[in-house]
Length: 331
Ligand code: ASP
Image (cartoon, rainbow, N blue to C red):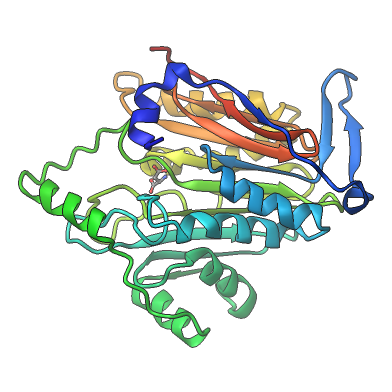
């Protein structure tokens, strides 16, 4: 279903369980744990991602169930959305900035705290893979704009036209009024943030987006900013965000959530506190969407948002589930 309609009909969102046949042998090393209070079961390997990106979570799960590591899982998972021309907020097909250029933001973080990011990069489809190369092949964490693009070519990535006819036509229509007022809760919040724990219990995360539609040229949101759009601490857990990046940056949201888990909060409680920090800074104006998801070392997960309509996928041996997120506001 088209995201816009989906969000408008958000009250109709229901949890869906798709039964998934798993090969027991490939999960030999999977570990089941029970939380301290003995009530909630936790399991790994597991992957969690923002929104109902079921193909992406399925791809990541394929990597994990075959014994692959969490870094490969999150990269392969989010690449599905980067390649999907119908997803207008990630990778190829993303909506352009106000000048008609599609610019991509992405970051990735591994179990050792290594990270890499690309900001406002044009003409390369798989920004997450370039971010990984930044992490693995350079002494830097972030490359931006032309420098990121040049680096991508040096690493063998191909030049790709990211602007699809559909996104171009919508942009031309938008230009007639050029109102820089995205309809915040229903227009452009399909950033994919993904967190995974592999059979060894190691956590990695990835986040990739084309950012806010019709943004100012050069605008960068939270998604490629380590600590804001994504943070992983292999001792504790990970968190990632979708929504209005400026607000997530102001509270360093994903880092905050991981630190709250370090202090003992569950992933769910930590996500709720993360959203409430943002609300506290916007007491008079809450007409925007933020969604956080988090996972702890045991594989327990949580998600929380401002407005109803946000969902997140989990995939483990327990099944492949689209979880409606609880929200701070209710319609
Ligand atoms: N967080 C992204 C950004 O601000 C956009 C989104 O998730 O809607 O660029």
